[in-house]
Amino acid sequence: MTIFRKWMLLLLVLCLALSAFGGMAETATVDVSALREKYEENALNVVQALANYACDNLNLYGNKSPFNRKTELFEQLRKFDGGWFSKTRSRAVDNLKTDKWEVVSNTEFTVNATCDFTIVYSYNRSSETFHCGWKLTYRRADVSSAWALQDVNALPNESDALKAALYNSQHDDITLYPVTTHFGTGYMAVLEDPSRMYVGTIPKFGAKIAGMRIDDLCAKYNAAGGMNGGGFEDAGGAGKGGKPFGLVISQGTQLRQHTPNGEASSVVIGFDENDKLIVGKYKSNEIEGLKLRDAMAFNYALVQDGAAVQNKNVKVAYTTRTALGQDADGRVLMLVIKGREPDSLGATLDELTEIMLQFGAVNAANLDGGTSTCLYLNGESIYSGFRLDCSRSIPTAFLIAPVK
Image 1 (tube, rainbow, N blue to C red):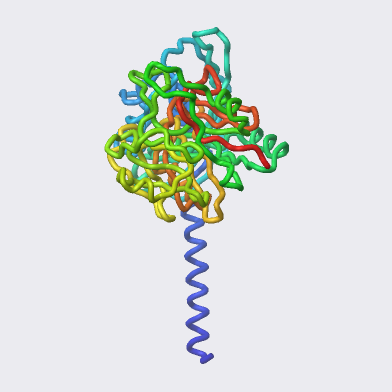
Image 2 (image 1 turned 180 degrees about the horizontal axis):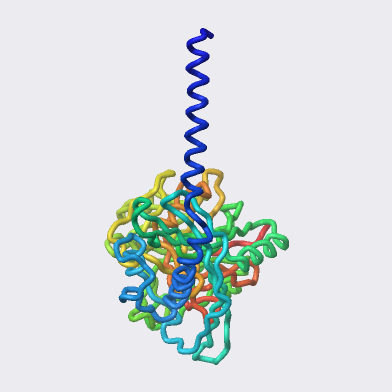
């Protein structure tokens, strides 16, 4: 190496060192103590507002809103689906706290804000306490402008992690993982053997026929567990749960025809004779060629052939969600996101897609979420969006056969 090149290399190293030192010094000019003193009340108001929002759609859009109207976050909240707790009158917010104030740069800082939110249910006067936790991100355009809340991300739920750890210690054929989204938390259950997954149904379909809960469907088929499936007739949210929309194939027998023109039955979701998950929009005359052994239908594909599917014009942004996927090794991915609750507002379709891709999904689809959402494993309701029971009455479900 020539002397000139040595000097140039030394100069480059010195410049990099000075640059790094300068960046540290610039960041250090933001006083964390001063930020906390000025913005702690705002952070606590935000976490309290988020918890309340699931209960009664607290007016986040008024003049006293802690949210910046010009942010994407504000627009996302405007599309929130609302909650089971919208008619709950009795509630209490306690233990409001902040911690982990961190300066990311001279134009960004983050803080964790938490509270305990206790609800007294109107139907039986029982109470339940939710520990709500969110990581808040504040930003400003430059050092002379004001700080504003720009992003919110749910903190990992400790009870979810404990439930998953306990379940995994007792079972080794299905692995349960806690997951988080922008505004919510939930679970991913991974089934190693896809041949165990099939479609279970009620004995007879009909608008005037009552569906069955997931636990009752599991008992009927002697299944090890299951999750809710496709769409069904549910006028005003008060349907009996006995009439599915679109294609239904159960253990090799086709029970209903494919109706690809309906929004609630446009996407085929099912396993073929080789235990591969098939997801996509197909014409009625293409169904036979897919060689499906178990299938149903709903409205959105999430991942196809390893690539994310772009879903536009989705009416509801954040809500309780259910999704089914499969990775390249054949493992079945069963995802539920808690929603409409003080500690978890839910997820978007894009967030479902992101989680599926993180778990290696090559194909995945959205299932009928909302109050239909339910993951039931080995006699335990891991999560149900229908809070009065382990699930709503439904006509079909993806079930899991016992280990052979």
